[in-house]
Length: 216
Image 1 (cartoon, rainbow, N blue to C red):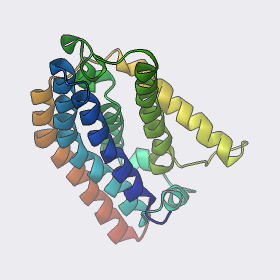
Image 2: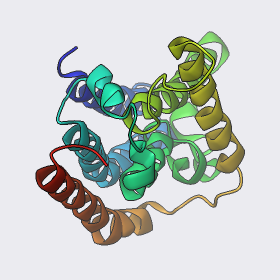
Image 3: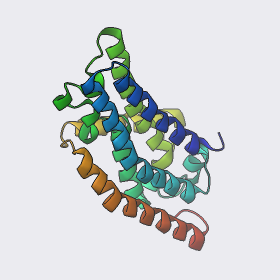
């Protein structure tokens, strides 16, 4: 798609409605609070994520995911010269799959939150959806920041799979080693730290592109 980055962001935003409805549907207090927690979390992470995606798109001068990956061939991967955007992106992957430090929509203090009233096949599908979101986020990191399928000796699809697996393993390894961040504190950090950082990263990328005419 010529606007694949925009499509990815739009599909990710749909999780807001899905998670809130999952919390609202059972007509129970704890699950509803979990749903509202996710909405509050989304308001905090979405703008930094958008600027991280804008940084990658600006560096490649393209909104196409394939175009962004192609722009990194023979150049520094975007993760190397856009470290702030890459870090914000990975944090947002945790946030929209509500894992690790951003797992409070399904927190133990709410008996599972959005998961509190789910059981059997419904719970299994819901949990599988969380892992699918995490995997999709890891997969999208590859063309956006890690050079796509570029690499020696293996076909492009194999390198994409290896890189996706590496990012996914890193996220899974770190998710139980990072403390859960309270919603109000995360919102404060997002607006005071992450937003300015993401904006500065996008501006730095724009300056590099304007002065050099391309990627380093």
